[in-house]
Image (cartoon, rainbow, N blue to C red; front, side, top):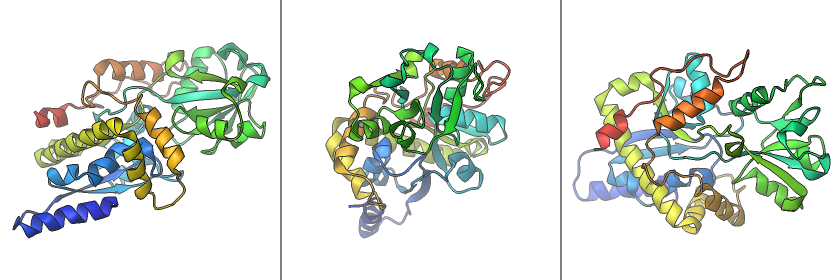
Length: 329
């Protein structure tokens, strides 16, 4: 059963028992394409958790040309998934995004290098070519390089940055010494390309003190002034976290639900099951997705540590809200 089929079935059931109240529509914009990175939302739809809350949820996949802050600013979604560095940078530039929930507790971002480049520590990056994702994903990298004192303009005292597509081809083709990878996705593309773990040197951003908050739920600030919207988001977050809890406990089933919703047909069962296993390691399992203020403060401090070129220039005010969780009580 697909997401839309599940929602339709729930509505039909409600009508069949004489319930006149229509389901409340919610549009969720994903940060990337349909994959296990977003399993909790697809599971919540498939298992009827959104139906139970009286919600009609539409899940819109993302892609390389989709920027969630732009989508929500243009009215294309009620709530979006974005990384905190991107969301806070967007906020400073005039898009008033507010974090209402943080399902991901840990960062999955890594820099994966070929061992034959001689890189054994960040001190060896100087003079090397590094693949970096842009579109909002570059901010943790730029902060890290600034902390290391490495310019990113390709000069002899810095690193050469290439704009990496969402693949690992630059590493495989030796166009880059290191590339950006996620623990749950691109790293395994390197392995599937024939590399062995011992052929690689991996630097996890979390372990380098540069781990920032990744997949969180963001809404527009003005909408939080509407009690009805806050109540709707409380129902959405409650059902979504129920979906994440189910996905974590039933990873193979969750991966199959994701596959059923992959309209592109590009995903494989093996990759999605492996991805779900890695995603489970990043999830918040204690606070029900409520953002820890310490995690926010750490992310802000990292983003502001860029010397003369910080990602954000001041600590954001009003960038997070507990209103949705207060409404869930």
